Amino acid sequence: MEKSLDRNGSLALGNAALYEKLRRSEAELREWKKLSDSLGEIHLLIHSTLDMDRIINGVIAKGTEAIEAESAMVFFRSEGDIWEVKYVYRLPAELTGRKYDSEMVRHSVIAIEKNRPVAIDDVQSDDRVDRRFVDSLNIKSLLDFPLSAKEKILGDVVFHYHSKATSFTEAHVDFAGKLASSLALALENSLLFNELKNSEKALKESEKRLKLTVEEINRSNIELQQFVSIVSHDLQEPLRTVANFLELLAARYKGKLDEKADTYIAFAVEGAQRMSRLIYDLVAYSRVGTRAREFGQVALEEILKQVKDSFHRAIEESDAEISHDRLPEVEGDGTQLGQVLQNLLGNAIKFRQKAVPPRIHISAERRGDEWLFGVHDNGIGIDSRYRDRIFIIFQRLHSREEFAGTGVGLAICRKIVEMHQGRIWVESEPGEGSSFYFTLPARQGKAG
Image (cartoon, rainbow, N blue to C red; front, top):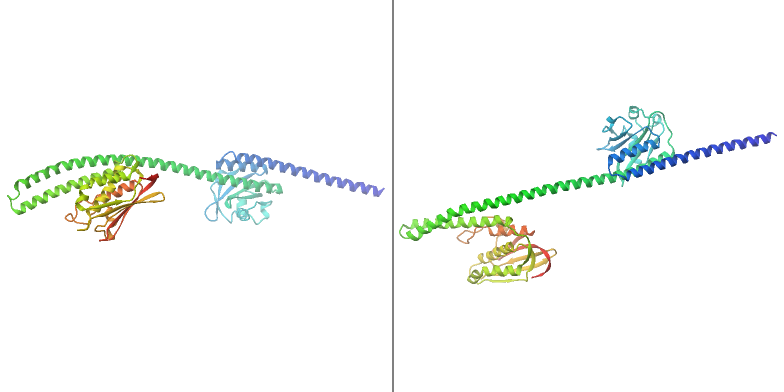
């Protein structure tokens, strides 16, 4: 009889233990399901927006409710070992922006260094927290998880319990880890989106400023062109009058006055003519940028033929020989490119050696996405010290008695070539001739 009772009593105890185990399992399953459902809602929120404030506020609110915490805060790592509160939930708003050193938030440092959640059931008996921090907020328990995405630490989120200490379950820690991963990735995407948005905004602002600058430059160019035209006209008129009367004086009184008077009149006539040429060349230089036509297809073979025809007399008088490679078609302003060839050929003929007929060759070579042109001569050459100086307006290397000119031609060449997105330079040695090179963008097509 006693054995029967013992057997029945043991059976009852076993059934009670099994019932309790089942009851706990059901409770755990309900908790896992509740947390899983909360994660689903959080994922929907995260994927519904790229707004960082909305993401963080929504996630910490749902996360706090899911694990039945009483408050939460989000730290972002600031400079050095300083931690700044960026968001709070169910805590005083004035905490936002407050900064703590790493000692005050040891739990955050540990969570980030280990890159996994830190669950502290009782802060009063755990050395992973600083009593100053938890006492100031009356915290009894906390769950801290790091925010890291693509090996980049963004900060951490801390859930607090104030009314009583709590025991965190495996479900709580698992939930915190999954929540951390999702939130960190969402924040990373939000940061990238904001950077892109700011970049687009900055680009639009830059485009707006560029447009205003271009409009201002165009307006200034028009005003400059008008000014130069007016000034050149107003200067040329009195100069022509002065030159005409000086020439009349020279014709009527030459030989009738003393020798000095004839010399002075000749100087005055030459000065007036030189001033007129300077004004003409200055106007030509100023018009390079303001009177360019829309770029089109330019056959350089035809342009060179026209330039050679314009130098027909100078070529005959100097016994010059001009040869050239097959020249291509390019995109540009035909009139301006004709000026370049005209100035370079004119210089090759003008700056020739005494008793040596000019021998000039124009080369053309395709190099990738550009054409390299060269105008090679056997003239007097240029000292290497002056290779850059000669492209500056009004810079001359010779006296007017040796060679006529105003020193504007090569400056015009450089301005035109640069407007065509090319470069121009010279390679030369005194007495060895010169090679003037310039580049132009290549167009799709065959040589002319």
